[in-house]
Image (tube, rainbow, N blue to C red; front, top):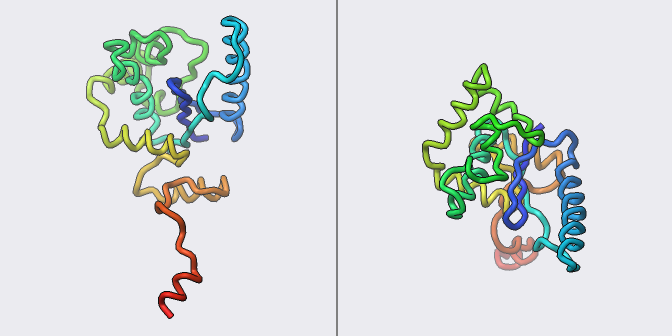
Length: 189
C-alpha cells in the first residue's frame, strides 16, 4: 500500500491507509469530530477549515522519507521552533528521539533505515542535518495541491498504474482547455 500526504490549512499528515478509502474517511471523521469539539468549546458554529483537504499518493521508495522531512520541517520553516523535535505534534519525537507515541506506526521505509531502533533513529536524525532540496519541496507541494501521484519522474508506470486504478488523472495535464477537434479540422481544411 502506498502512503498519502494529506494537507488541510496548517495540518499535514503522512498516512499509509489499510484500505483504499481509509484516508478520506479519516479526514471526514476528523473534520466532523474536531469541528464539533471546537464549536462546543468556543460556543461557535460553522466550518473550521477552509475547503477540502488536499492529498497526493506517494511512491514509497524515494519519497516517503522526503515527505517525512518536508512535513516535520514545516514548523522550522515557519519559525515556530528551531528543530523539529521541539514541535509538540511532530512525529520526529517518535522517529528521531524514540519518544513512545501510540499514534505512530513506523513505515517500511523508516524500518529500512537500520537493523535496530537505535540505528533507525540515528539514521533518521542524520536525514535532518542536510537541507531538503528546494526542487523536491516544490514537487511535494505541487503534487499535494493538485492531488497528483508523487513519484519518480522516470517511473511513469507508477503514475499510469495509479490513473488506471483510480480511473482519473494522477499527473498534471496541459494547461488550458483541450483543443476541439472540429476547430482544428476547420483551420487545417
